[in-house]
Image (tube, rainbow, N blue to C red):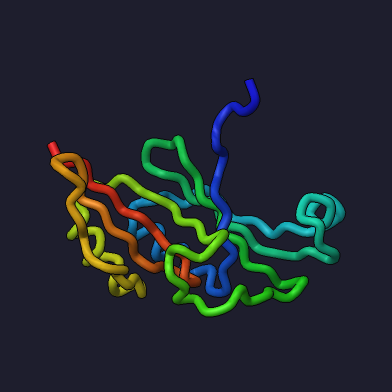
Length: 146
């Protein structure tokens, strides 16, 4: 077997507390915070002098995790405008299954979430939408219809 599972998705952020609040409001559960630095961090990332804070969050089912990283050194590099459209090469999104998509969007708006497009219906299967969350990352939301 090539892999066992997908362990986590990582997102680099500037405002750790705001990013944590956003994902906790979404329904993720905090799973620890730490400062990371040293030779192993440099070796793993291919950067020199890594010092960053990380926060792990997990989904309520315990199967998926998100790692937020706030770099103190080396300095963060901007990847360009934070409002890039979804079709930019290398753009990625994280998709979450939710119980009530409209309620979720409404709860995330005070945390800076911006709906991209609108909530769309895919046949009789799903309601889907993309929102722009912390640091411009695109978050997909999917509500399965019964």
